[in-house]
Image (cartoon, rainbow, N blue to C red):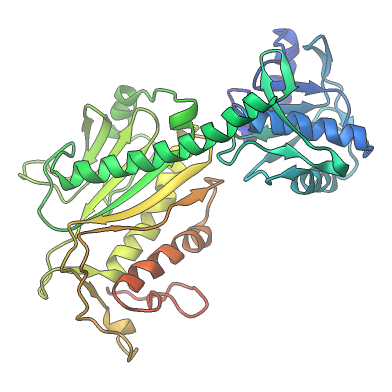
Length: 403
C-alpha cells in the first residue's frame, strides 16, 4: 500500500513507483488493463481485491504496465466517464464477493489529456474476512503474500475464520479491561467519584498491523497549539502530557482530580472518559448536555484518527461505569412528553452499549448523528423511555440554546 493518503496521491507519486522500481508485494498489485467485462477479467479483479481484504489490505492499481511485477510505465486506461467506471467496479465488488466488503475506496488520476486514467482501488483489511469470489459461479477464497495472490487451502481457510473471530474477541476484551481499569481507579490520573461515560475508538489495525504513534512529537504539537485539534468535553484544549500508555489530555492542572481525560494509546486507540457533573437532583445524567457534547466532539476525534492515518475499520464503544442509582435528566425542551418518568433509576452499575463499526472516518454532522443516535436511544431505553427525546421523530437534533 502506498504510504500516502488516497486523496493526496498524484501522478508524480505513481511515476516514482516506476523510477524507483517498486515491485508488487503483499499490499501492492499492478494491472495493465481495466476489466473488460468478460467473466475471466472480472474474476481476476475480484480475486486480487479479495486477496488483499483477506490479508493485510493494500492498493490495487489499474493502468500500470509491469513486467514480472516491476512497473515500467504508467500509460493509464481509457475510461470515458470516470463516475460510470467507478460504479461498474463497485457493482462487481458488491455482487461478486461474499460477504460483501465493508468498504473499498476508488480513486481515478488523469495521466493524459486524452482521457486516460490510472485507477487506485484501496482495500482495507477486512474485519469480517475471509471473503469469497462468487461471481458467475466462481467459488474460491484467496490470500496474498509477497509473491502475489493464491487460493487458500482448507487449513488456511480454517485459520482465516478463526483469526477473524479472535481479533474481534481481542478488541472486545480490550474494552472490558479498560472498563475494569477505570472502575478500579487505575486510570492514568485520579478521577472524581461520580459516574462516568467511556468512549472508545479502536482501529482494527491496532490488533492486526499495529504501528507506533510518536506520542512525544504529538505531545509537543498539541502543547504548542498546532493541529490536529483535539477538543475536550469542556470545549477547551486541556493539558497535554505523557503517560505509560501514551498521550493523555486532561483538566487537572492544580486540582486533585479530573472530570475527564482523553488517552491516545501508541497503537492509535482513543479513550475518552467523562465524569458526570453533580446535579441538584442528586445522581443525574444530563441527557441533553451529554448527547450534545458527544455529537460535537466525535467528528474531531474521527478527524484526529484520520490525521494519524489510521485506516478503518474502527470499532466504537460507549460504556457507563459507576452509574447505579443514577437518573436521566430531562431538559424543559422535551418535558412536554407525558410518558417521561424522570424518577427511574438505573439498577446496574455498568452499562455496556453494543459496538458500532465505522467503515469511514469522513463523517459530517448528519453522518455522526445517524451513527450515534441508535446508541443514545438505547441509553433512554435503559431508563424506561422509548427513544431520546432530544431528537425529533425524524431523527433531527432539536435545537435549543439551553440544556
